[in-house]
Image 1 (cartoon, rainbow, N blue to C red):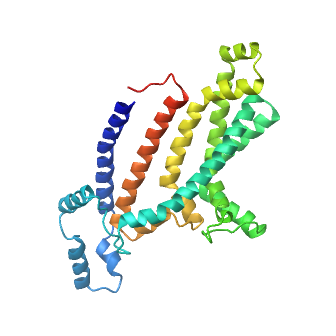
Image 2 (image 1 turned 90 degrees about the horizontal axis):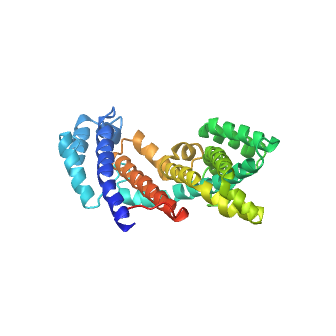
Image 3 (image 1 turned 30 degrees about the vertical axis):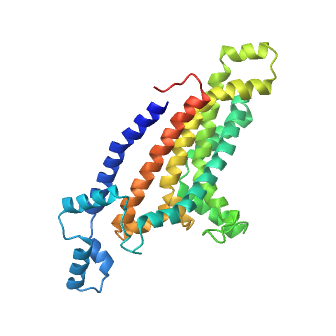
Length: 308
């Protein structure tokens, strides 16, 4: 197992190098001059030239790329063009907000999605099963930003039950609506996947044997059936959680949530290259790390899985 983890960590290096390279050149090839964005509309050509020389925009692209890689090897993600703060400091400040939102959305998705799928599998073709599957299809088809606006209008504006947006004093009341909006699609996916895998497992012979031995139904379902059906569900949880940590931009934007994704959107509009590239690299590391953890979790949940 140790050698497998070591090999996976080594394989991450070329992936991260590709991400770094693509992110760097795509950000530089985007339309617009960063010196113009930093100088403002009333700046003179001399002022723009001074900014270009100060930040190295006047140098060839390969020279800028080489300096960027050299700084990365020293663990330096650079300074934000806008706030002049280290990018690592900005990520450390903003990421906890994104993590809090992603974790809340994932908890909502796991509790509602897995329980709904489990009950549907135990009551196939019942009114509950049909209703749950129709709702899950609606959940998958509903865009996050549209659902967020609906929640804000009905729950906050009409019923005045929860605050519509922002972080406020950090109370859970500010977290409920964005967590529901972000987690709804995962609720639907987990419900459908849990139902499908449970229905498949419930037909296995070893479950009939377990019933024949006189085991309690709840024990057969929880210990034998669900334990063997959970691996595909874990895959969806891992992928969705990683995507929430790196891609909850729309939800953060709609609900004015002060997370890293919303800050990256602002950085893109300002052509703040160090923040953009640093965030992309950080998101890539998070995604790869969670995928590795999910693979290791497979082996823990199913002893038949062994990595060499």
